[in-house]
Length: 384
Image 1 (cartoon, rainbow, N blue to C red):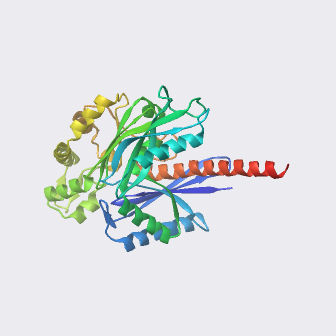
Image 2 (cartoon, rainbow, N blue to C red; image 1 turned 45 degrees about the vertical axis):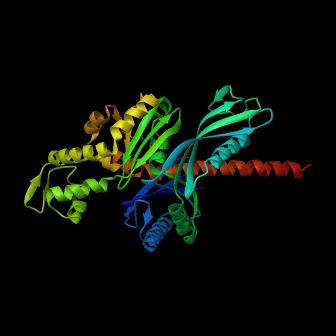
Image 3 (tube, rainbow, N blue to C red; image 1 turned 90 degrees about the horizontal axis):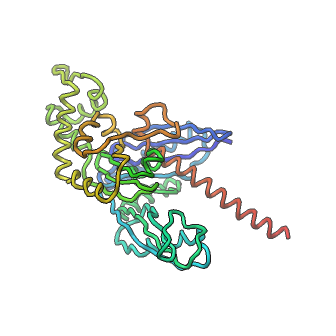
């Protein structure tokens, strides 16, 4: 039986969507597409009706293409310039051995202690568990003791934005299973296992948001968003080239691949444009104090994995040498360890939407296994 899992990456410039198909035998196939989006800016939805119409068309397209009678559930990702992130502690008392339920309780306890105002927690990542104040464990299930402490890394977003998104999907009749930061979900599935273990920085410049984070020991342990994106660079580029933004829009993909002609009168070399972009990036990065932020990160975490860059802007614009010099770090690119993408360009563009679809598949399996266990318990009870 064919199964389908849908992930969306709600970008400020584009909405990317991925459909992960599981074919009989367990083989996977991935289908990706995107549509332009101008319905929200930074953390504000400026045209809710337009966004609803765009999403409605996306789901109609998916349903028709894959002959789906109904789309019940999706995973959604997005990046916002006003994400909040912090480490929160929690604890619970348990009897004898730590159970999965005890782990869930201690994470919930940490979230409850957060006492957030006007914020919605969208990610909880356990960083450390300690049993009886002595024994540290990555997975504490099965350990003997009485008290379980946890340090949980939390990321929250504007509750107003969160509620509007939920309302839109509710009106469309589609359940959002998980909402997560785009850069996080990209890194979760397209950082190599080794990089996530040994300590690796992650960096993405989106249309309106820049994200800097760290994975270590398999988990996210640092995450910060900045109010800056590639749209500022392209606006500056339009002024530099003395063209309007519509012309920049038409030439975005072209002048980063070859020499191109602007207004059919002036040839501009790719190297000239790259130098201009590097100069502007340095100005913006310096204003945001990104170099200082990364230096502080390297003092706190060992990063033998270097810095992995995500998103089309950084990966496709040949900025590797600039970033290597600016951050004084090894620069690497995402890995397609699941062999789902046909090209590196697809991986760069659709890593968040694809990661969202993969996570939905994993969570669906967990749910199916839980239902099977409950069913077996009932069958055993009533068969006596």
